Image 1 (cartoon, rainbow, N blue to C red):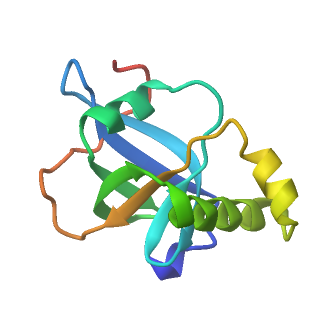
Image 2: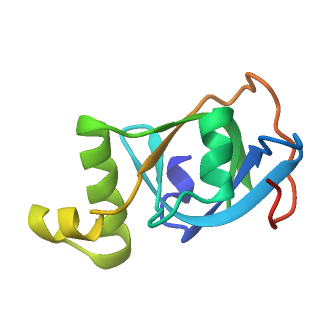
Length: 129
């Protein structure tokens, strides 16, 4: 995944928590420490609710697709993800600026596995669940 780290967007596909259908969204992302961190702020969206139900996802960045396991980053992983995301899209900043920017944000962390624990087929964007 290192070769795609400078791309702007990731396409994340989750499994719909009610229908089981694929649900794909385009998001900002950053790579750090072998993980993919996703940018999200505000209310929990369908894809966030889907992650809470089923952690197996697929990620596609510039034609490179991988399976991954998702979780909400906490502690040191959250701090690493916040910094990586902020610096990728906005440049260097103090911890205070970054903390303020992510004050209301959840920072999902994906751990790419390459092999599917349970395949999630690519789908089209739109409300699924």
